[in-house]
Image 1 (cartoon, rainbow, N blue to C red):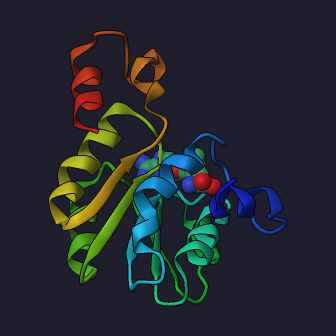
Image 2 (tube, rainbow, N blue to C red):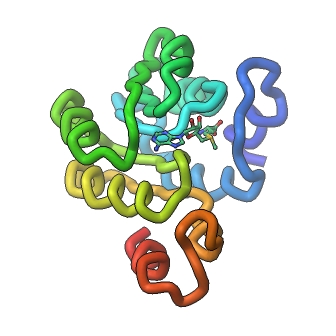
Length: 164
Ligand SMILES: C[S@@+](CC[C@H](N)C(=O)[O-])C[C@H]1O[C@@H](n2cnc3c(N)ncnc32)[C@H](O)[C@@H]1O
C-alpha cells in the first residue's frame, strides 16, 4: 500500500472521494513532485479531503489549488490550499485561473465529469501546464454514459477519451 492509499484509509478528517485503484496511478505519476514546490490544480473540491491529502503527500512547499462551482467550497481554504470558485466549462474563468498561477505542474480533473466540461478544461489548461507536468482526468467511464454526454463510439465522447 503506498502513502496515498495509507492516508486514505487512515483519514478521519474531511471526506475524500476516490476510487481505491487510482492511488497506484497517482503515485506512479506524482511521486517525482514530492518535496518540491509543486502546484497542483484539482477541479472538484466537494468536501475538501482530497486537497488535504495532496498537501500531506507533496509536503510543505506545495501549493494546492481547488476549483469548484459550489461557493460553499471556499470554506475549505487553509494554509497551502487555495480555492477558486467557477465553472470548469467557462473558458474565461479557466484563462483567468491560468494567468493567476505562476506555474501549473499538475491538473487533476475530478469535477462534473460531463464531456463538454472535460473537453473544455483540457483544451484550456493542458497548454498551460509545465512541459514536465502531468494532466490527469478521472472517471472517464462517463465517456460511455449517455446522461454525461457520452456513449459508446460517440464522436464527441471518443474524442474526449482520445485526448485524456
Ligand atoms: C466527485 S466531487 C470531487 C471530489 C474530490 N475531488 C475528492 O476527491 O474528494 C465533484 C465536484 O465537482 C464539482 N463540480 C461539478 N460541476 C462542476 C463544474 N462545472 N465546474 C467546477 N466544479 C464542478 C462539484 O460541485 C463537486 O464538488
